[in-house]
Amino acid sequence: MEITDIFKIIQKRFLLIILAGVFGGLLGLIVAKITPVKYIASATISVSKRLEPATDGSFSYEGFYASQTADKFSETVFGILKSESLAASVLSNLSYPITHETLKNFMGALFVRKAAPSLLYVEVTETSRGGAEKLGRSLLAAMEEEVSKISTEGNLLVKVSVIGNGLVVKEEAPNPVLFVILGAMVGFVVTVTKIVLWKI
Image (cartoon, rainbow, N blue to C red):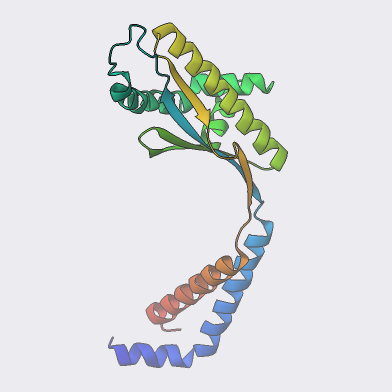
């Protein structure tokens, strides 16, 4: 089949294609309306090493190695945030049951990435603003407790702190325009494909 033949087939069914695009757009709008709003609690965590001044007045290389220590320890903090043991602590603090399903749901709602050598970005997603804030604060508290324990036991003098405005909770709603455009495109492509292949 040549391209001119394809155009002729499409031209004959142009109204059907337009209607399919409109129908797809309406379906996209419906999906956007019924998709629940999400609330995301996020924070940026700074990992640093406390400096101990030299007591005898001599020069100290502590500052030179402090940034390297903080950078390496940020990998440890990353691992702590992604661990199931911390997830269990968070759920326990919130009086949630600790089951395979609740742990899986929590890990699915959690996102962690390195924003810089000694900075970590973390966010949790919930269906309500209050739920997201409560979950985020519980996560940060459990993390700080675990880091403090490790730092004390290893005499690392490493600390973590939330920078900026602390925990930020934002609303994330579906974009109706985007859903309409995607729905219309899907309707258009599917209809054109069927028309060309089946020559209807």
